[in-house]
Image (cartoon, rainbow, N blue to C red; front, top):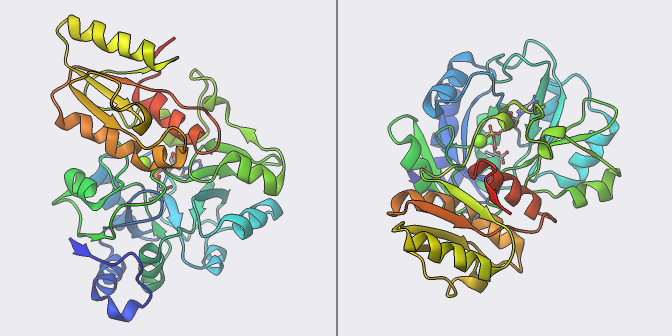
Length: 342
Ligand code: TXA
Ligand code: MG
């Protein structure tokens, strides 16, 4: 567990970063901060390193990992060809919260990292610690979110410790991550670019650069089979039932009071604007409704916090699906197993 300053600018002055990079070169797995969530990194070329990642997380083996790079030229090693739209996206959003799916060059990366697919997801994170570790390791680094599979992604080193302590070689602690939800995943292997997972970079931002994009059918129809293997797993769920409540705060208050009258201990996921309005057993104010980026930043901390509180049921506000609100609602719907009180 090594603390590092988020504003690290010199590798040499941070022995922790060299230590982490050395461990990666020795095919050990190390957690580090990115601007979205903490990642659990390993050498993407080595089967043993990748197996350690899957084992530590308890992750299903058919769910491919995102490959993280520090410099664009690293891609050439393991990608066949970069289509023009992918180049535009890299230009506009890298380093940043956008994962681009491309066709793979066979025989370079561990097939365990890509779950044997002919494609690979690549991203250049926008975090000085992540970039320095990757650069220093001189490797493509496979890194899923550093949580136990099924739990909310970690937005602080404490969350990583909660889930993976004793199972990994180390954690670089760079404080809280900024964005708070994972990267947007966009498939650029077909004619029409398709969003597979909404995330930190918004669809509005993407369409400004490359024009109209498709949304994977699974994002709007829960019966459809997602193109991104990871999207089919239930995720982010707290240990007790979570319901999303449509409509006004008055309605939410009514539901809370009804549940309390039935003797239930009630938790509420709300926002700064409403936190004093409800009478519940535990209230988490998840950022400001007026600023959805603050909601995204606090969402996973909030979802995790319910597991440490004595509640039987959780009610949550819903959010407009604009900007990063799309990612927030995608994660909340999964956490609630699509249970919405209309
Ligand atoms: O922000 C992030 O993306 C974080 C940080 C650590 O970079 N990483 C992350 O990784 O969220 P993970 O493994 O938790 O999620 C990766 C997602 C999964 O849904 C996976 O199925 C999808 O990306 N994915 C990876 N490679 C893919 C591919 N070749 N085709 C389709 N989906 C892919
Ligand atoms: Mg994940």
